[in-house]
Structures are given as structure tokens and as C-alpha cells.
Image 1 (cartoon, rainbow, N blue to C red):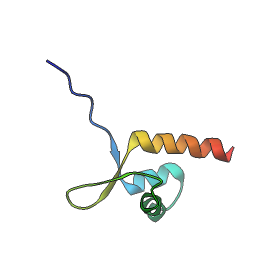
Image 2: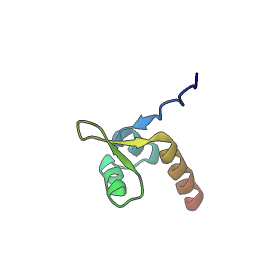
Image 3: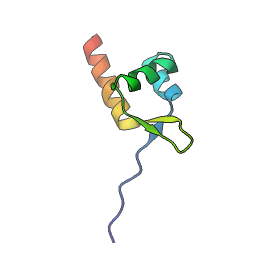
Image 4: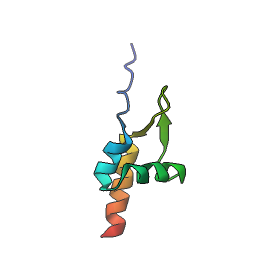
Length: 65
């Protein structure tokens, strides 16, 4: 029996904003600009893949140092 991969961890705009030390509205602007991929919940809320956020955060830290 094949094992399904673990479900991707999804973060709220507030959680993403806390990692980057920005306002949650900035995260929404990034998604609209295509800098982050937003996943919409059934209720229409945005969620972001933790793996993608961590990759962007690593790139951000490298470019600012």
C-alpha cells in the first residue's frame, strides 16, 4: 500500500508576516504581485505553503546580507 506524502503545512497571512517582520497586507500585496503563491480556502481566505515561504525567506536574508 502506497503511503501518501505528508500534507503541506499552510500558513495564514499573519503567520507569514510575522516571519518577515512585515504587515499582513504586505503579504497580500506580494501574492497579488506573484512573489508568493496564495492558495484560497473554501471560505476565500489566503493560505501560503510553508515550504515556499521558507524558501523566499532564505532568499530575502541572502539578498539583504
